[in-house]
Image (cartoon, rainbow, N blue to C red; front, top):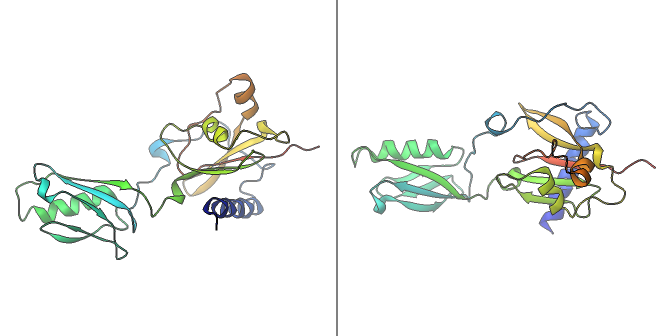
Length: 210
């Protein structure tokens, strides 16, 4: 099965359910003003199975390791053995490792980072659906904007109503819809609604009424 088509199918179903519930209808209410971003919206990443972690112990390279989170949620660290990683943030895992290493070395300085994200890959993507040349589900990248995502989708079709586009973003557990004046962005260079995107954002561009 084509993973992109499968993912876009899931997005279509989600949007259909939300629209049916009156949450994201194109004709329904929208939230005026720019969407909140940054730490206001993005939750701390929780590690999952198959993610790859880099564990670095300052001045102790023999204790540093790159490890894939096993299905049981564990990684193995030299000297201290298995450590629970799944369901925790990198900072929490680093704190656990630091506490256990402190029995063997003085004041260990530990950092943990996710070098390969697998478990939540689809949750961190940006989707563009509707009247575009090719609906896409793209990995989120820092600095990515509405225009970047729409261009990756090949631009809008001749049947699109670009100034009725919406950005759907989850804020405080609720899906909010924000207007995007895409025609102004594409034809007039008005970037006032060329918002910077966050993981999980969905851009929907409807067809115009004839």
